[in-house]
Length: 194
Image (cartoon, rainbow, N blue to C red; front, side):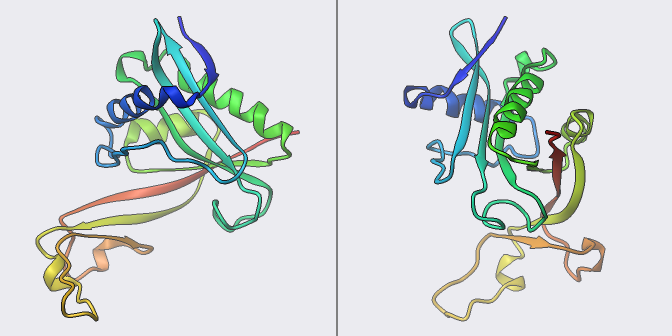
């Protein structure tokens, strides 16, 4: 059994642990944080707790000024920065409950769309679609390790690229040199009815 509650600053170590472990078996395995991000706009930060431990979380930020957090699309929006559930607690409805609570929070603030971005894990994409989110855009996240020095030149000769992350808006098939790794990143939105 689990319960939802607001995040508290004393939760930070457990929040970080939950996020890392939840992302470890996903395409976001490399997105490690050392501190929980602080939002400058109104936000909702919830945790799911079971047996005294944080087993899930969601962080959402309400975009007050259009096109500052979310994509340049019509309608008041909020960005889901993180939604995560520990692997051993998945398929128990925790993520669904976190999103449903977020929808109610968003309605109270006049938000018309929740936006989220994710990489190319088939199970994550399927979950967003099952939750009613609609994909509106995708791009390629490219990772250059060995080839970074040859592919990218700096205007400053003292700066030598060693590893580069880049975004590509077209098919990577058109690239002359393929990157060392890549992920298709997809933007999803959930329309919130009033």
